[in-house]
View 1 (tube, rainbow over the protein chains, first blue to last red):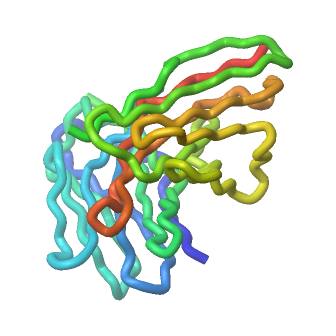
View 2 (cartoon, rainbow over the protein chains, first blue to last red):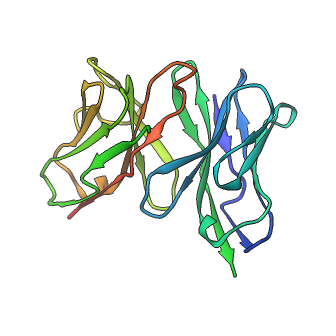
Length: 113
Length: 117
């Protein structure tokens, strides 16, 4: 069965520091992978997605993610975090057979001054 | 582009009453809409998938008679929580997609906070 694992429930980084949020997936075929961000009480905003091609994907707000098939990972990175980046981040994989998106448990990012 | 709205954004109702939540794609036609439920500090759990003009497909464990979904047009889907109880209190989020690989991306609504007293 398809699954998404985000090992870190929460992460705290200093403003200006670099960030990496981990995501591992389990899927038999080539996955469609996504990272979403959710601010409190809000819906989800797509940061970036990977369907095929270049394994390093650029997204909005300065985020990028790298697809590593050998590690079944799709980690999200940002070189310099801003206080406004504090939010919940969800990694997700699309089950293309059923067009169902499976979400990870989420990682809460805290940014300290 | 690709904006999805939900109405209402917040609703409080009494136990035993029904509540309808609307999900609209404002600037595109959504062949498929999804309804999710999110408990505090938890991830999104898919409740059902609806395609325009056909019955919704419910996930295992989701009561279809309690959570009525109607997808009457390519821009509107509704979720009705019937005979709501306090345990139905949650954050409900819809998303809309155009289907196919090119439309694999889903566009999410801002969510509806339901509180049942």
